[in-house]
Length: 171
Image 1: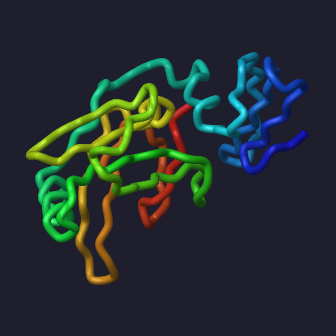
Image 2: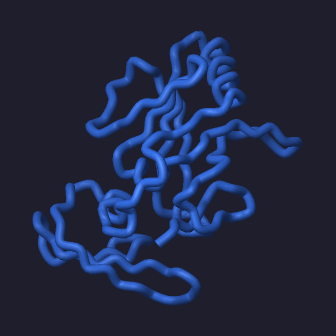
């Protein structure tokens, strides 16, 4: 049974044999993985636990001064303590996309979340996304067409789309 974009197929509900197909340069690769899958469909968590992402360049995420300043401005504008949650999910033109979510700092952290701080700015990365973001730098870019949070450098990325929202991981 195919479940969405990732090409996942399952054979039973609790312990499942999963086949992942990755489209890379027009080739299709199948990576069989036997694991327990939670009821929520989370393709990134399966891929992040695969053997391809066991090597770490650096175990932290860096925050630029520009990013920290923008988060401080947003806290002052909203008159609320905020943190930035950075996630990686399947999608985008390169296979995976970055998601940036502002959330109150009093919101409960999920199990496995990692926190990073710089200049009063707080960033949270979930466990599965951390495998894709190790050694990355989070920045804030201001351009004429718009301003946004970005991952300015990611040692785990082989290539990225022109807009910088999606990327293809190194395998």
